[in-house]
Image (cartoon, rainbow, N blue to C red; front, side, top):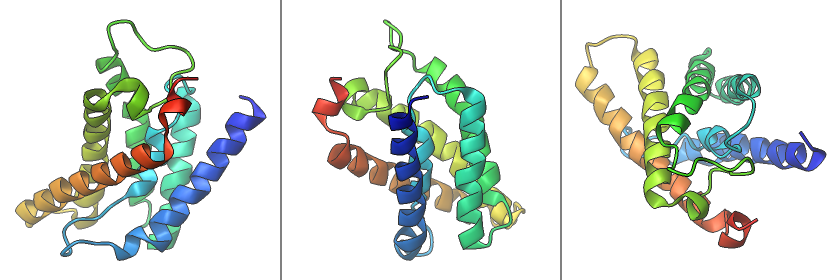
Length: 174
Protein backbone atom coordinates (compact mmCIF):
# COMPACT_ATOMS: atom_id res chain seq x y z
CA UNK A 1 0.00 0.00 0.00
CA UNK A 2 1.58 3.23 -1.15
CA UNK A 3 1.56 6.41 0.88
CA UNK A 4 -0.67 8.12 -1.72
CA UNK A 5 -3.21 5.28 -1.38
CA UNK A 6 -3.10 5.53 2.38
CA UNK A 7 -3.33 9.32 2.51
CA UNK A 8 -6.25 9.42 0.07
CA UNK A 9 -8.21 6.89 2.10
CA UNK A 10 -7.41 8.53 5.44
CA UNK A 11 -8.83 11.78 4.07
CA UNK A 12 -11.90 9.94 2.71
CA UNK A 13 -12.40 8.25 6.10
CA UNK A 14 -12.32 11.57 7.93
CA UNK A 15 -14.59 13.27 5.38
CA UNK A 16 -17.22 10.53 5.32
CA UNK A 17 -17.40 10.24 9.11
CA UNK A 18 -17.52 14.04 9.47
CA UNK A 19 -20.19 14.29 6.77
CA UNK A 20 -22.23 11.62 8.55
CA UNK A 21 -21.96 13.16 12.00
CA UNK A 22 -22.20 16.84 11.10
CA UNK A 23 -24.67 16.85 8.21
CA UNK A 24 -26.49 13.59 7.60
CA UNK A 25 -27.67 13.28 11.20
CA UNK A 26 -29.79 16.37 10.53
CA UNK A 27 -31.12 15.25 7.13
CA UNK A 28 -33.64 12.62 8.24
CA UNK A 29 -36.77 12.47 6.08
CA UNK A 30 -40.03 12.05 8.00
CA UNK A 31 -38.35 9.97 10.73
CA UNK A 32 -38.15 7.04 8.32
CA UNK A 33 -35.37 7.74 5.81
CA UNK A 34 -31.83 7.99 7.16
CA UNK A 35 -28.77 8.53 4.99
CA UNK A 36 -25.80 6.56 6.31
CA UNK A 37 -23.31 8.04 3.87
CA UNK A 38 -20.31 6.79 5.87
CA UNK A 39 -20.68 3.34 4.27
CA UNK A 40 -19.49 4.95 1.02
CA UNK A 41 -16.00 4.83 2.52
CA UNK A 42 -16.12 1.02 2.49
CA UNK A 43 -17.95 0.71 -0.81
CA UNK A 44 -15.59 3.03 -2.71
CA UNK A 45 -12.37 1.24 -1.69
CA UNK A 46 -10.39 -0.38 -4.52
CA UNK A 47 -11.78 -3.74 -5.58
CA UNK A 48 -8.68 -5.75 -4.70
CA UNK A 49 -8.16 -4.32 -1.21
CA UNK A 50 -7.08 -6.99 1.28
CA UNK A 51 -10.13 -8.53 2.96
CA UNK A 52 -8.64 -8.37 6.46
CA UNK A 53 -7.83 -4.70 5.94
CA UNK A 54 -11.42 -4.03 4.81
CA UNK A 55 -12.80 -5.79 7.92
CA UNK A 56 -10.60 -3.62 10.15
CA UNK A 57 -11.62 -0.48 8.28
CA UNK A 58 -15.26 -1.55 8.54
CA UNK A 59 -14.95 -1.83 12.29
CA UNK A 60 -13.11 1.50 12.53
CA UNK A 61 -15.63 3.50 10.48
CA UNK A 62 -18.62 1.88 12.19
CA UNK A 63 -17.14 2.36 15.65
CA UNK A 64 -16.41 6.02 14.85
CA UNK A 65 -20.07 6.57 14.00
CA UNK A 66 -21.15 4.59 17.09
CA UNK A 67 -19.12 6.93 19.29
CA UNK A 68 -20.96 9.98 17.99
CA UNK A 69 -24.41 8.35 17.78
CA UNK A 70 -24.10 6.46 21.10
CA UNK A 71 -25.40 3.28 19.45
CA UNK A 72 -23.29 0.73 21.33
CA UNK A 73 -21.74 -1.10 18.39
CA UNK A 74 -24.69 -1.34 16.00
CA UNK A 75 -22.91 0.58 13.22
CA UNK A 76 -19.64 -1.25 13.86
CA UNK A 77 -21.40 -4.61 13.53
CA UNK A 78 -23.27 -3.54 10.40
CA UNK A 79 -20.10 -2.15 8.83
CA UNK A 80 -18.11 -5.31 9.55
CA UNK A 81 -20.93 -7.36 8.00
CA UNK A 82 -20.88 -5.10 4.93
CA UNK A 83 -17.09 -5.42 4.71
CA UNK A 84 -17.31 -9.21 5.04
CA UNK A 85 -19.95 -9.52 2.31
CA UNK A 86 -18.26 -7.05 -0.06
CA UNK A 87 -16.02 -9.68 -1.69
CA UNK A 88 -18.84 -12.19 -2.39
CA UNK A 89 -20.98 -9.41 -3.88
CA UNK A 90 -18.07 -8.28 -6.04
CA UNK A 91 -17.62 -11.91 -7.17
CA UNK A 92 -21.33 -12.13 -7.95
CA UNK A 93 -21.15 -8.99 -10.09
CA UNK A 94 -17.83 -9.73 -11.83
CA UNK A 95 -17.90 -8.51 -15.44
CA UNK A 96 -17.27 -11.02 -18.21
CA UNK A 97 -13.67 -9.80 -18.61
CA UNK A 98 -13.07 -9.70 -14.85
CA UNK A 99 -11.70 -6.81 -12.87
CA UNK A 100 -8.35 -5.14 -13.50
CA UNK A 101 -5.97 -5.00 -10.58
CA UNK A 102 -6.24 -1.19 -10.42
CA UNK A 103 -10.06 -1.04 -10.69
CA UNK A 104 -11.91 1.06 -8.17
CA UNK A 105 -15.60 1.31 -7.54
CA UNK A 106 -16.43 4.08 -9.98
CA UNK A 107 -19.74 4.56 -11.75
CA UNK A 108 -17.95 5.89 -14.86
CA UNK A 109 -15.67 2.87 -15.04
CA UNK A 110 -18.08 0.08 -14.08
CA UNK A 111 -21.36 1.48 -15.41
CA UNK A 112 -24.69 2.44 -13.88
CA UNK A 113 -26.22 -1.02 -13.63
CA UNK A 114 -23.15 -2.54 -12.00
CA UNK A 115 -22.79 0.32 -9.53
CA UNK A 116 -26.48 0.38 -8.59
CA UNK A 117 -26.59 -3.40 -8.07
CA UNK A 118 -23.37 -3.37 -6.02
CA UNK A 119 -24.36 -0.40 -3.85
CA UNK A 120 -28.01 -1.39 -3.39
CA UNK A 121 -27.26 -4.97 -2.28
CA UNK A 122 -24.64 -3.98 0.28
CA UNK A 123 -26.52 -0.93 1.56
CA UNK A 124 -29.69 -3.02 1.96
CA UNK A 125 -27.80 -5.61 4.02
CA UNK A 126 -26.16 -2.89 6.14
CA UNK A 127 -29.42 -1.06 6.80
CA UNK A 128 -31.31 -4.27 7.58
CA UNK A 129 -28.74 -5.07 10.26
CA UNK A 130 -28.78 -1.54 11.69
CA UNK A 131 -32.55 -1.17 11.94
CA UNK A 132 -33.36 -4.64 13.21
CA UNK A 133 -30.60 -4.42 15.83
CA UNK A 134 -31.89 -0.99 16.80
CA UNK A 135 -35.40 -2.23 17.62
CA UNK A 136 -34.39 -5.84 18.39
CA UNK A 137 -37.99 -7.00 18.01
CA UNK A 138 -40.38 -7.98 15.26
CA UNK A 139 -43.24 -6.11 16.92
CA UNK A 140 -42.76 -3.11 14.62
CA UNK A 141 -41.55 -5.13 11.63
CA UNK A 142 -43.54 -3.18 9.01
CA UNK A 143 -42.26 0.18 10.21
CA UNK A 144 -38.75 -1.23 10.36
CA UNK A 145 -39.06 -2.54 6.79
CA UNK A 146 -40.25 0.89 5.63
CA UNK A 147 -37.21 2.47 7.33
CA UNK A 148 -34.89 -0.09 5.68
CA UNK A 149 -36.25 0.48 2.17
CA UNK A 150 -36.48 4.28 2.36
CA UNK A 151 -33.07 4.59 3.99
CA UNK A 152 -31.50 2.25 1.44
CA UNK A 153 -32.89 4.34 -1.41
CA UNK A 154 -31.85 7.59 0.30
CA UNK A 155 -28.30 6.36 0.93
CA UNK A 156 -27.97 4.96 -2.61
CA UNK A 157 -29.06 8.31 -4.10
CA UNK A 158 -26.55 10.07 -1.86
CA UNK A 159 -23.77 7.79 -3.10
CA UNK A 160 -24.80 8.34 -6.72
CA UNK A 161 -24.51 12.08 -6.18
CA UNK A 162 -21.08 11.70 -4.61
CA UNK A 163 -19.91 9.45 -7.46
CA UNK A 164 -21.16 11.85 -10.12
CA UNK A 165 -19.73 14.95 -8.43
CA UNK A 166 -16.38 13.72 -7.15
CA UNK A 167 -15.41 10.65 -9.21
CA UNK A 168 -14.76 12.13 -12.62
CA UNK A 169 -14.52 10.34 -15.95
CA UNK A 170 -10.83 11.30 -16.16
CA UNK A 171 -10.19 9.57 -12.85
CA UNK A 172 -11.85 6.43 -14.20
CA UNK A 173 -9.57 6.37 -17.26
CA UNK A 174 -6.30 6.01 -15.34
